[in-house]
Image (cartoon, rainbow, N blue to C red; front, side, top):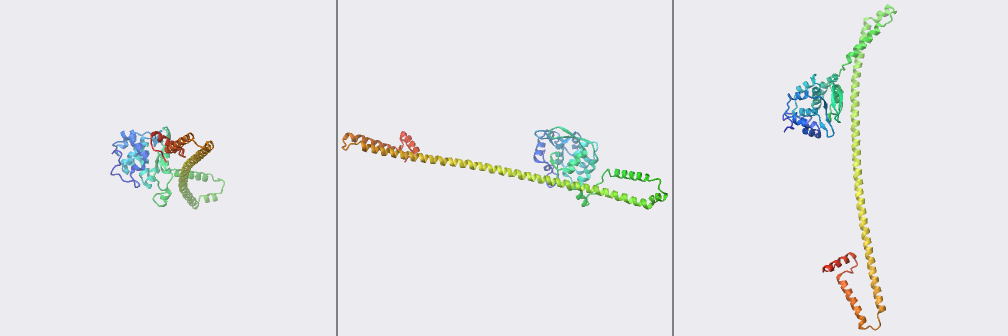
Length: 377
């Protein structure tokens, strides 16, 4: 219940406001002690007190990437969704600089393109120092205008992906914003006028009065005024084109980075497919070797079986030949008894199946004969 968005909150960019923060960072914020103890039950009014206690800004830090109190308060603002007037008051607050940064960060996440440029660009004139916690837990020195420039020009800030906004020159073309006027433009104009006055005072005193009064004639003064106006307009246009070129270069850099990211994804997919093919090829080679080993064992077993069969046949032939050569022409009762005994033994051997040509079956028949079972055929 403590992590649910306010039921009266509106969707931002078509989704729940808390979904503007990545899920991993969101879950770490929910588990952090500062969120459970200090952010529980905060409202738009009591949130100001917690924002005034901030002494640094940042995203996540440390080995387990713990969120900073600044990030917890940003998440709380997304959850309760304060009114726009309150956020604008945060930005206009000049006494507490971290309250101003908190409001600017929230407006960059949830505000429209016109509101972002309208309320954040004046903060370029704020040069106060800020403490920023880095990812290794150490602090670094930065300034308010640098943080605002990061919010307006970068894609990531404090480990959060910034929503895309239109370029300023696009809004100027659509007449949604007025051309940006530099704060230093008045100083430049005063400097130029001072230089022109010095040039006028440095005119040659030896020139005749006619030339001097000709240079000082009202027509000449009006012409010089028109030239100054044209120079001022030319400088303003150059500033505008420079901002437009900067935005165009930023777009090119963004497209180039996105193209590099796509190339890295393609290389990663190619390496993954290649490793998978190599792994499948290795498995195929292993199965091939196992199959060849089984084929070799079967051939060796068949070859040994044929050799044992041929040896047994040759032994039987030798036995018969020896019996014919050693038997007398006149056989008596004493000579026939060994022959009958051999036939009986041979018959018994054939009955128990121990002389089977297959060595495995013969070995199995020996075991079955010892157990009193019938032999295998």
